Length: 275
Image 1 (tube, one colour):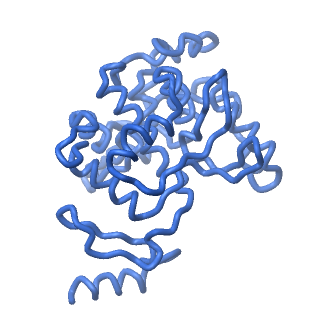
Image 2 (cartoon, rainbow, N blue to C red; image 1 turned 180 degrees about the vertical axis):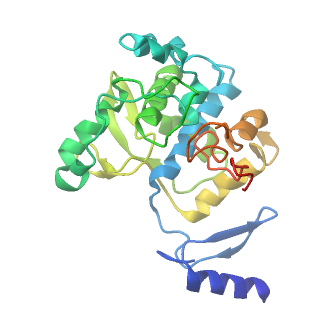
Image 3 (cartoon, rainbow, N blue to C red; image 1 turned 45 degrees about the horizontal axis):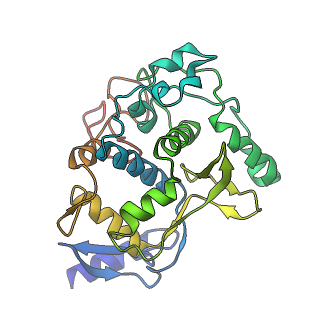
């Protein structure tokens, strides 16, 4: 009764879809779902966590380490800007790389001219002037996520979607999972790693991963169980711990300090000692 009252209060006092797409899991069991829990749609920036998961899969395989320098996998990264040689993969994954693309603005194109917006987004992987030295600050912006997604695709030899579908979505039985893309880039199939709003080369709307609350609950449960699914270890638990705990030092001036992991928001202690 109390739980039903709590959900009723939440539904009345929240915005958007209220509790229609809410799912509650307790001890591994589904105990409550809203009327639209099976509604499939783009999840935009929550897509970033799936890109982090691909990083985790490659860490689990021993292919790379989060402390590897990015230039190890993309030697051209620091050709024009030597400061980029200091970027480690962990810096990309925690939004503290200092990387910026040649396109520093252009969001007005999203509502005015979608094709120009797409051209703008595709240049996210073309290095521009550094914002700061890696690890010295942080900022929430998509170019660095696109660059990490690009590197992970090159390293794995597979698209981000293929990696997740084979290694995560399949084993945990996600029924609804797809990932919008920008088509082929440099001979690779390139998914939208950040969930950046836009359109693809066919004029189709894209905002990263498409799924629903029921299947995302399975994904969340996998992380809650430190990468273990029914006795099968899909992800290195040490990586899960890093990804879901704060990786941005509280000492630096940033609204991410104390509250951001590897593309996961955390409930860490911030500079004012509050969570």
